[in-house]
Length: 472
Image (cartoon, rainbow, N blue to C red; front, side, top):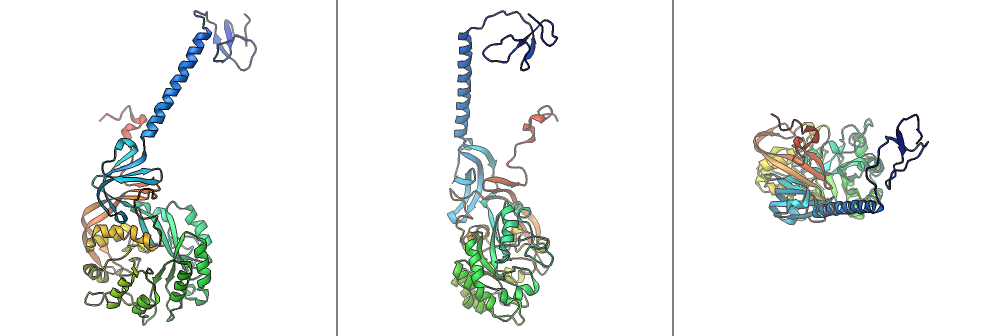
């Protein structure tokens, strides 16, 4: 036969699977050395090869499908001490997750049913923590304090590493600025970011902005609350006048929108009566934050003999929510220690985190929780005040628990023992022996933080390590 492309002793063959055909002068062909046919392939042979290949692919598909069906769960937390206050679970259990939802909480779930199994023995497994008093409307606007300013924090850098999966920004935005907060922070965070809307339209800009009674509009505030599901309440803060208008207007907006009000109370000297706030102006379910503060412009909750004032006891019975709101200046051991000894526990534990408090005595959610553990508050109560209680307070019953079908926000903790120092807002130290540390955080079923790699395979399983993995 003739030569092609100057190739001697070669044949040009097409890439057809049904048999190789000899052709000349084609651009879509390959050049192969000429060979002498030893065997003749028949149509029967080709049909048999085709059928065999199809059967192989079908078997492979069925094997893969069977394996997929066998994996009922995407992740299984095995053998941890589960604390789920809503469901009254407090013991060693397994937690199975399917995609972004809790699938099952039970004893001895078969690990073969899970794609990924995490050994949680010796660790606490809880719903993802909810920080009900945070400041996350961060930005670069000068003189904007915690409303699009430098002192607020982007949430994702300060949440997952301590087991927090939901934060509630406490009044950074008002009705005039919430759209910016939503566009700038809420929509770009893996952390679930909710909001207490400030009764001040400009939000928490500080200084004279938060004293402007003319910018406290109940109707407009309520309207924006009802238009945005991320808003779960209304905030009053930093007002230093003698008027009750900020509180009353916030409560009015709360009635219209059917949401609670959080009050950061005080600032005037002499202070307005705390009794009147708790028993007259607030409703059951409204939130008194900075509960364990002792400030010049606000009365304390504990008297000098270490007992709660009678009106505080009455407020507890009324259903007023007492929130920690530690912050940079609002948590004193002189108030918290006698309160805990008297059994006056906070309803909710929160940080009031911002650039100042995170570098002072507060630090983070787990540090605040660890303080209460060392002060004598039962661990299960501490977890409840950081999960199910805040979820209930903000009317988000879909959060803060591990019920089957709930979103798979989960935190895993170790309890360290040793000698630890805890600092209050006045700079006084309390020494304790226990400290919570976050090992693993899941947000909607995804591992978003893993301190010690308990959800990861060993490096020795990396194919690139096979040649030297077993060498010493």
